[in-house]
Length: 137
Image 1 (cartoon, rainbow, N blue to C red):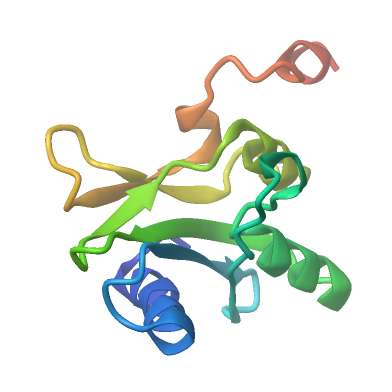
Image 2 (image 1 turned 180 degrees about the vertical axis):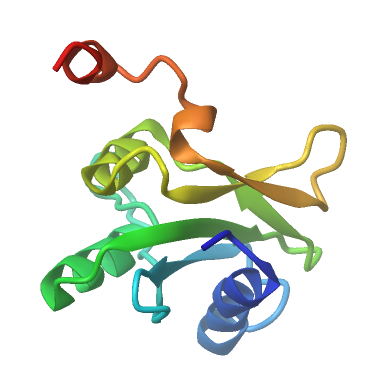
């Protein structure tokens, strides 16, 4: 299952429902293997050291439900109302690798912050550190 318009809109809808339009906030949405959509957001903390990624709540919810994550997208909405897809950070990539390198993730298209695409996690991070241990087994 790829990151698609429905998943993108699920994240955008959470931003707008929770924070309003032009909010300078973010949210994430994931698909589980059963086709369930789970969304989440994260509070802005004054101390960045205790902040969480927007995806974290959805990842935890899928894990609680015993559902495998197959696709993930993170969206930031600027004060101008523009929605920008963010590539998963390194920590979120580690969390997603729990489900393997075939998990689809959204990322911004080259040359335009207004467009996005979907690739397998292993394509986004081709030199993943654990590959050395799995290639030879």
